[in-house]
Structures are given as structure tokens and as C-alpha cells.
Length: 639
Image (cartoon, rainbow, N blue to C red; front, side):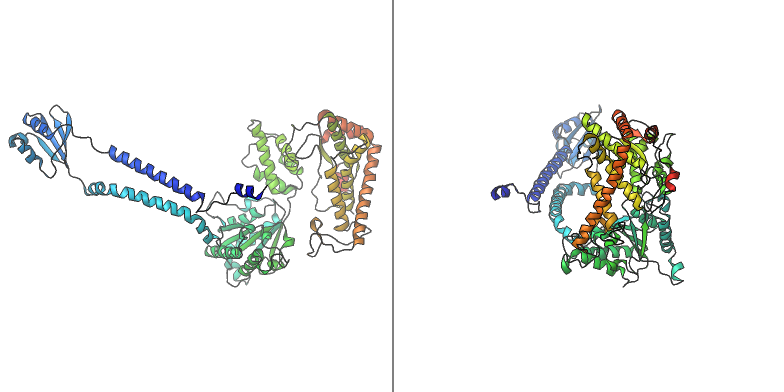
């Protein structure tokens, strides 16, 4: 596009002196005109109607004895006749009514027969009548000018609030927002560490008298969704103190010094409300290691971190303000942030085990109506590796599935479907495979399931499906019978062989390979590389860790930096290749020797699209394969 056209189509930001100002001006003028018109309409509508009779006619009626009473209200006359009819008239200004009527020939005796009442205005009515016609337009003009000035100053006043932190405050007296340890299931060790903080906030003298000082900084470390923020809120709820919550990214702005100013303002606010808790979520946004060479000495993030370090260093006695922070990347935090006196207590929050998952499911099911067949123990067994957030999502998805089908209770089938939805995504039944693709997908998943059932260290298969979920055309769901904290080399090798089962089945049956196994190949290659470079599971490379998390080099080197030679790099590639080739041979042997079972599993998948564990094990038994049992896996040796 030519520059002239770009300039023609470009639109600048809305500024107080630009289009928004003129829009507000026109809007204000229109509103002022409408208000003035409305005032005129109502002012005119409140005026009393014009006189019904002239004063001379009134004198004639009084002389004829037709008038029974007259009420005088200023210059207005309200006349009541003997026949109960009412009329109005006006007298001469600054002249008494009796004098006016005398001038028309009315005698005193005739006036005595008429009841004359004088209505006097109160003071406020008088002044209101006199001042409202002048004050009302003035008030409208002042309001109009104030409206325009506020619009013009809005953008300019924001500059003065840059240095102010805007933490979210949870009041301890707010019962709806209060969270206690009863609302947090699992994480027993973490709660035990934090109970001391609660005790200190409630009774600090108990610790100070014995010379103990509670840690000023508590760092909550754990994976996403493990409940770090919930635990921090529970500490504040148990202690009954204000809870100031802010994200690490909210400190950082484009302008240098704003983050440091916000840190000072946050700590000042917390000290005024002491005893209190400051909670900084995702502190790694500002707490990363300094001195990386990015941004130099004027780096805004580093200045913000420096201010946090100063505030936590203890130049001022602020024992009643406790700083809590959460991160899932403790490895990237600056060492100065973790030294004693700052975040010197680190609480690790792991993924919940089966018992903890059952407690978490019970908490999330408090207000949900369940059918009689719901068994939360089964759901807890089938969700290894789920975090607390995943379990919340599971229960919520189960309720949504029941509501979608217009049912009043949540059944076990809804929760089972929710497990797969959380893990893999929603079903895509509209994504219909043609006959050839359906057959390829069936053999692919059958290859995974068959190899997994034959390998001693692979997890048991719970379900096989060729119904699309998320980005997958089909899936084989295998779950461990028990929670695992460690994995052995033999388990990794069987996992790699199982991942190759689909690729080998496609190649053997159709003499061709599709794009279906692409994700399997990526996963197994990354796993084989981690075995060599991180876990020391290669005899040739030995017990040397060559890479850190995610394949990055260790000791602060760049993402592309390497702490090893080109020869070592070639040896790594060779070892990865050897691991994958060995697993390939193992899986290929299973599929070749058990081709009849492969055909049976694939045929059943093409027919029903889904095979549950019980039916899958019946197919295996029919072809001479013994399904895995829990006791068989428990007695397997670990390497």
C-alpha cells in the first residue's frame, strides 16, 4: 500500500483536544437545550390560568348577592359563588380589593355579606418563586461546564495515578469473600507451614517474648492450578486480617520508576492497615535474575525488583506485615529475593494425590445435586495428575453437561465424560471421518492400545475412541492405577514404544504413513532426549545433566547456548536415535506377532467408535493376552 493511502486510512488516538472533545461538547449543548426547554414547559404549565371574569363583573355579582366568598392570593382572586361554582379574577396591583370594589359602587353592607380570606405566602415560597427562575439556568450552566472540564481532565489526571498501586483488597469482615483452611483440601504440609503465620498474626506476643521472628516473606511454589492463591487467601481468612492482592505484572509500566513507586505505595497502604498480608501473584514477572544485560541499569523491571528488596529488607520495623508470593517458576527468581530475611520460607505445593483429590471433589460438589450412582472415589482414581483447578473444571463441566440435557441431577456418566473433556477437549461429532480415514484412525489407536497392553511397564488402557476430541482424530486413554512421584527408565522406554504403536500399525497395515502420528513422534523424541540430557539414563553419556527445563542450557546460558561440544551433541543425537530404534523394534514385534488382536480391536472400533476398559480386556482375553492387574504392576522392579 502506498504511503499516501496509509496516511489517509490511519486514525490517531482519541485525545481531549480531538474528536472526543467535540462529541462531548455537542452532547452537552444538546442536553442543556433539552433541559432548558423542559424547564420552560413545566414553568409555563404551573402558571395559573387567565381570569375568568373582569373585576367589574365581580362587582356586579357581589351587588346582586351571587358571591359567597373571595380568597385573595396576591393579585389573584378565587371567587366562590352561592351556587358553589368557582371563578377567578385579578385585582389591581398595589390596591386593596375593598377600595377597588368601593370605586365600583359596592357598599360596605354588601361586602360584609361576602367572606373575604387573604392567603399569605410563606417566606420560603416567596424566595423560591423569586429565585428559581434565575438559579435554575445558572445551575444548568455550571453542571455543563463541570461535565466538559471533567472530560478534558480525565486523561491528564491519569498521569498522577501512575505511581499508585491498585491492589485488590479482601476485607476480613466480608463473609462472602472470606476463605479459610476448611475451603482448601489437600496440601497438608503446606497448611501446617502456614498455620504458624496465622498464629503469629493472631498472637504475635507469643513469638516475640521467646525471641522468635516470624518470616517476613513466604514463597508459595507449585504448578499451575495447585491452589497457591487460594492458600494465601485462606491464611488471611483464618487470621482475620486485610488481604492485599496484586499481580507482579501490574508493577511494570513503560515509564521507568513507576513500578518502584507502586511498590512503595503498596507497602505504605499495607502498613497503615497492619496487621495485614500482601500477596504478589506471579512474582517471577518482576523477580527474575538481574544482570542478564537486557535493559541496562535503567531497566524498569530491575528497578521494581530493587524496590521490593529494599521494602522487605527490614530498614523499618514492620513485623505485622507479611509478604506472600506465588510462582510456578522458582528457578528463575533472583537469589537476593530468596535470601534469609526476605522470602526465606518456601512452601512447595504438589499436585494432589488420590485422597486429596477426593477431598477436593467433595468441596466442589457441595452445592451440586448428584444422582444416586455418583461415586467420587472412582472419579478420584481416574484423575491422576489433575490439579485443584482441573478438578473444579471437571465438576463444573459435569454440571453443564447435565443442564444441557435438561436434567436436574448430575450422573456418574456426566463426570466420566467431563474427565475426557478436561484432558482432551470437547467431542467434535460434526468432524466426520470418511471410511478410509476412519479405518486408519482405528488401526492407529488399536496399535497404541495393543502395545500398551503387552508391555509390562506401560499404564493400563481405560478407553479407546475414534471420536474426535480437541485436535485429536482419536485417542487412547491410559491411566496409572496409583499415583506416581517418580518414573523409571523402563517405564520411559515402554512409553516410547507405546507412542510408536500407532505409527507402526499404520505403516504395516496400509503400507503408508499419514500425518496422524506427528504429535506422537514429537512427544517421544522429546522424552528420549530428556532421558539422555537430563535424567542420566544413557550408559554412553553417563550421569551428566546437559540441559535444564524445556531443553535450555544450564547455568544462565542463552536459549541457544550450549555448555557442551559438537561431539557431545552428536553423541546425544546418536543416543536418542538408539533409544527410539530400540523401542520401535519392541513395538513392531508386538504388532507382528499379535496381528489378530490388532485386527479385532480395530474392527470393533470401526463398528462402535468407542471401547471401554472392560470390553477391551475381553478382546485381549479372547486372543490369549492377560490384562494387567494392580498387583502385577506393584511387584514390578524399579530401575
